[in-house]
Amino acid sequence: MASAVPDITLNDGRTIPQLGFGVFQVPPPETQAAVETAIEIGYRHIDTAQMYGNEHGVGAALAASGLSRDEFFVTSKLNNGAHLPDDARREFDATLKALGSDYVDLFLIHWPLPGRYDGDFSQTWRTLEEFYRDGRARSIGVSNFTQHHLGRLFAETTVRPAVNQIEIHPYLNNDELRAFNTDHEIANEAYSPIAQGAVLDDPAIVAIANEAGKTPAQVVLRWHIQRGDIIFPKSNTAERVRENFEIFDFELDGGAMGTITALDRGERGRTGANPDTMNWVPES
Image 1 (cartoon, rainbow, N blue to C red):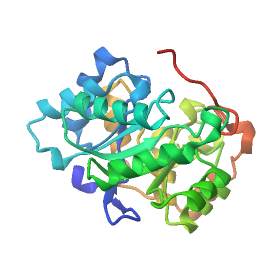
Image 2: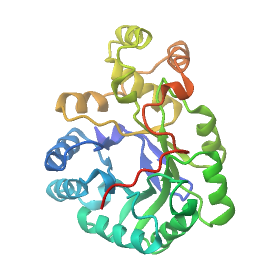
Image 3: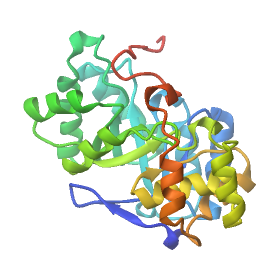
Image 4: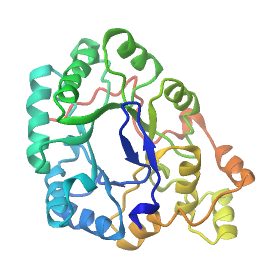
């Protein structure tokens, strides 16, 4: 089953499975079991973050799988409270220890935080470049960066981000930013791919799902796949984790794709924070 997942080639020459398993909001005590279930189903791409507090569970599941580390693609992200270089270095070391690995496949700046650290996310990026050059981060990227955030990185740093993980779903197509990323050879990763469930009752999506003999979630995830997005839906229910994996045995025609894309609500459809105003840092 794992071989059915297409790979996307990144601008650094490495590849990433287009479908993964996300552990956002999975409670730390439940993470190992959830990831083990995903691995049994066939997932080999796991997306976590320092702020999720569940990297240890991911690492434990990988260790318990009996598979070699190089069969997995693991992403984590920098804590918002660790943008200063020495803090970033310390937290990155902690990530590797939690994962039980001497490297992470992809490491991201979680948010640009323009209202924090004098708005200097370029210094944070240069620290990630250290991890990339010493091989402990096989690829590096960003999350929630807009065009102007990326433009600053292009002007002030050396390594171009391999991915930009941003909110994308039928109610927030984010197509201008997606196109900008593509034009600059930055892969699009879509978080909240089903808008935290908000799109699943949409009559247009339900009708397409009924015609295809699939669930609304499968239809929306397939829409992402055909658009070229990298996705990592999460669920604590084994049946839904399996359903989310079974999206490679059908295809949406142009009419269905267009109908789903036309549901875009722009900024009104956003379910998460706006990258230009999000400045939250967790309490230490």
